[in-house]
Length: 320
Ligand code: AKB
Image 1 (cartoon, protein in one colour):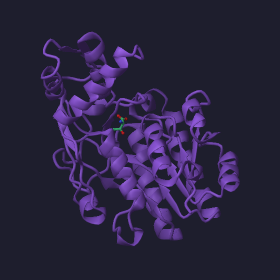
Image 2: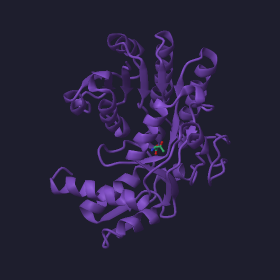
Image 3: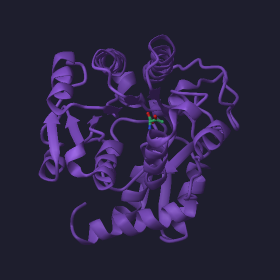
Image 4: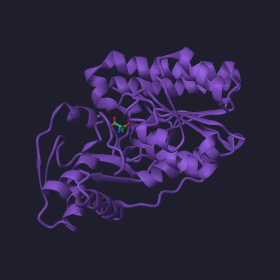
């Protein structure tokens, strides 16, 4: 039976992925870990939780041995905006941390490693519309550099050591459970919270900024579908493009206005505009569709309705 270690479980995606995995495989089969003890409190109440900093290889190995881990999902990462403020930290967590995961997995014969990548692997030289699976990877952020190098490293472990390592390029992820931390696409989450609380949002990128985005239920589905896919059927391994929706900030604001007509937005672009300008508008995910059957469910309006409902509920209860 699988014993799945999730690293970085208290983050935006990890916190919801752990809940889903516990439902699917049983809570005794999921080892949730995070470096922040407080952030993991909720996860610790409902299943196995250990404190783990991905850069601590000895601790990682000891947890894998303690629980006889068979699968690792690595959700720990320093994202693009924080990565530009702290590039050495981004390198350490995203590269040295990843190397620890791959090396421990190799030494202990772990059956599978899943490592998310990101649209941040692309750069201004990449075709911006329907970005192909195989294309120019010249990222300009430290986060993007570590993700592009990480994809190559993961594919190296597949080729050189015959390991099962897989990964997918997340677009901006929108959710209402745990706030994202330190990404450029965070505006697409913050806008909903501010719409509910203040009916007003000041956006840190311009209104015509268009980026690929995805709602959390689709993100969880994609992650679990790839996790469960038959490895022998995969031609790609660590770098699946993943498309769902693509919209400008104005289109996002217009979608919110359908449900909150007096919602107002203004714009004060900051350093994150430059990052967003290096990323594509939309990506071609036919490899993910062909090789493991990827298919998203949500569009912008369906997501907006669900986000406003969930955040409105929290607001009524005084939780935000
Ligand atoms: C970020 O904005 O840094 C992330 C990402 C696109 O990977 N959300």
